[in-house]
Image (cartoon, rainbow, N blue to C red; front, side):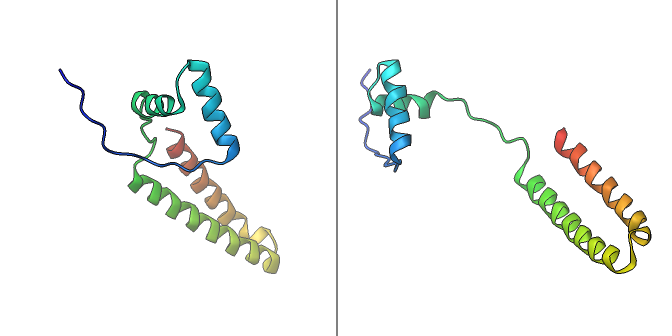
Length: 105
């Protein structure tokens, strides 16, 4: 069984601190920098995202809406006082709590 010839090269730019970290890690494992990087890239488990891209977009839209509502309520409370906006603030708090519960799943 013959090994496939490696034809693809990947270039990565690192700052000095990042390069020192890679060199140090490679040295600890007794590997060259190239061998170490190849090992990390090919052997590291993939981390599955907690949320789908669609859910992330939905959550961001909800957060933006909540932030806009909060800004409007803040302006309103400065004009009319906090008593008139208390019910809206309570509703907003419930929406934030619900979103936190969804994100914590």
